[in-house]
Length: 260
Length: 216
Ligand SMILES: Nc1ncnc2c1ncn2[C@@H]1O[C@H](COP(=O)(O)OP(=O)(O)OP(=O)(O)O)[C@@H](O)[C@H]1O
Ligand SMILES: [Mg+2]
Image (tube, rainbow over all chains, first blue to last red; front, side):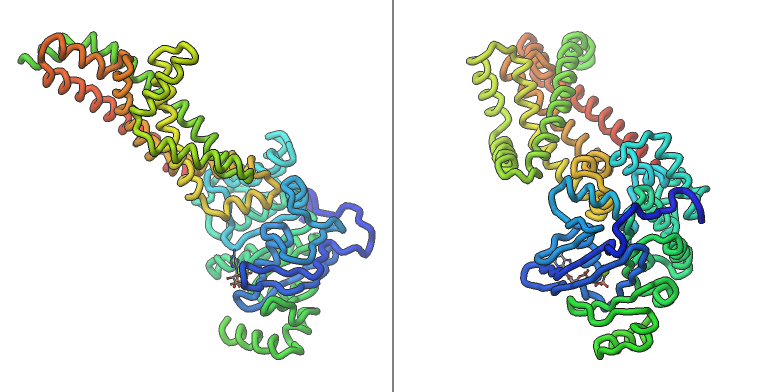
């Protein structure tokens, strides 16, 4: 996979993590969802978040790009602390792509218009430049023949690939994936994972929430098991998935092996 | 036969009135959409004073009968600046309709899935750009039938303008009936006029809806 714009990172002081989460806590009313999470994600690292339903995986991801506001603690991206003022949020989000379980493509726009929109609205590119870049990105995710289709005419796997291209159009330095294949028919999962795998090979920094254990084993640099609002186990995929230390981790892994 | 005669002979007079009514309805729709957009923006604002103002505006406008609102505006404005009855009617009808259009807009906005806003904001698009480029175009499709319905209501409401001497369709019928002592005939005829216009509006809205459906 070559052009367009292999998302190579701008110069960052070496050793500084791309994402640095310190003492992150999040409550909704009385219910504590995240309880003092500390987590660094290095430049170029692929971190896979796993854990039981309700563990707070989505919430953690959404706190990284400010869709949810932390109750306590902090998130830094390339050393810049996340602030919740609109202008600061917008500036940060330009460089942080997010892919959702339910795709969330804009249904009133064609595939290529979906990929062009933020380029024009946020990056102020001309329509011609945005179109050129969008069509290259759609080709990159294997959808060169679907550029003029509306989302309603695309399969789930195709929609999710458009959504990935849409995020990549902003040249993000970090990509967040929240169960990107959970809403897909089994036969469509592979094409989306393949695109993500290529992205990882290109050096993209990624935080991925997924139940795809094969993907975690093959692509993750680190697997993080979240349960009850905290990190219960983290490390290389083989270590976490095959030789977990905590009972909580063992129980979770037994459960997904038996249940899928 | 008499009825048909009346229908034909009243045509020139009623056509003049119809023109005024259509213009009044169009202006009402135009200004109430603009007013409603402003009210909804204020209502959704994070500035407490703005959203409070919108809440009060909606409560007052919906709580007052149209004719009372019209009289207050007509006699109120006339006492300050000289405006004609038509202008006063346009203002009154627009203000009245704007409260309902605002509700329609709000329900349209709420019908857009929150994931759309999250996707847009996640791309770095501002709140305003998200509203204009993502939410509004989707809300508009949902809202068109209700908006046409409101336009139909405004068309019929515009008859009230005759109370402040606007020479519109209903007023024309009133004058014909007074001159001929045949109220039933002319009020029946004028009803047919309203019915015909509503028919055309309903037909056009069906076309618009189908156009949007095709675009998926
Ligand atoms: N906006 C919200 N308001 C109130 N509670 C919320 C909100 N969002 C999430 N929660 C709660 O926070 C907890 C964690 O939710 P979250 O979606 O982060 O879990 P998850 O690990 O992603 O689970 P799943 O695997 O089912 O997606 C859940 O108990 C959920 O009900
Ligand atoms: Mg989740």
